[in-house]
Length: 368
Image (cartoon, rainbow, N blue to C red; front, side):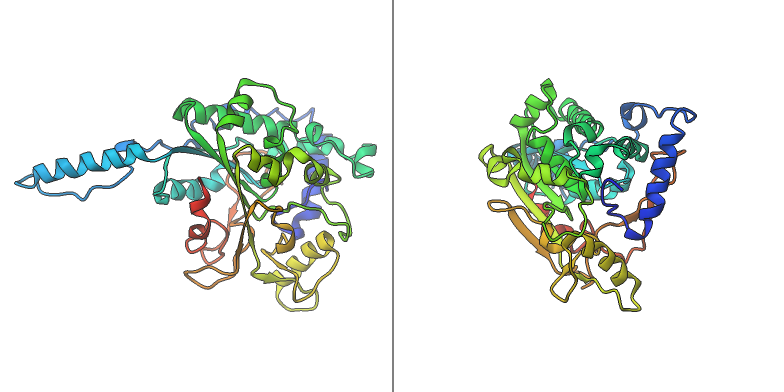
């Protein structure tokens, strides 16, 4: 497997088999439509009218009409003074745009410090991930020396398409926050650091207008103690690139916030299946287990943060329920290659993740 399956280690074999099988049958399968044809409009989020950004209590149309008008005017003025922002979300491996609809809708409605005028998910159907399989038989894969630019060009193209749609909807004067979930966090980091090699007008505008990066459950380092480099050199290239460092991005005016959970331990000898899954993920990534090795069930806490001046938000539990905070809210379905945009399998409501009530509020203000 070229990249760590951040949905569940249990799916690793199935994912790899599906990837190789589809690559073998590539010439017999219908080619998927372009991301814009599949996603443009279908998963678009309705822009919030600036006049509605601050709600006004309804009143009876009587003597209070003057007060209502004054209140509405005051609300509109207050809204116009807020920073106008858009949000681009870079998805986790095999996750699809519709998996993040509720999260983006909630961000748009609950973030009152700024005016979120538009949101998008980088338009990636799960079938796009099969393109990574082209690197499986190469020497660079075997040597763990894959090129980020070559291997992830299709993901960078989706990022630019999402940005282009945000600028078209919100205007070129908006500021943009990029949110990266899991692998999406370090792919976004690579894009911001210029590893994509893009020179398009969208990229040039994005360099000027992207004001913040928030990563959720993203592994930012591949330590020497790791038993295996599951990204086959991709993450190492990004982590070692000066232009992708927290200091370099900060010097360009990008505020970085890394969000990681320390809720779950990993154990191999236990009756708790979730602890076993966590152990099978933590052990290859950091090379050991123990009471001090915690994380979100997939990504160890120790790997979830960039160096200073990046902001570190370590989440221990959900503030509303006290439940552990897990890596994701869905179970991706890499085997569903017929409908590449179909939603992933939703987990139960009590399965708390970074976007759940009681957790979202712990990092929402860093969309800035």
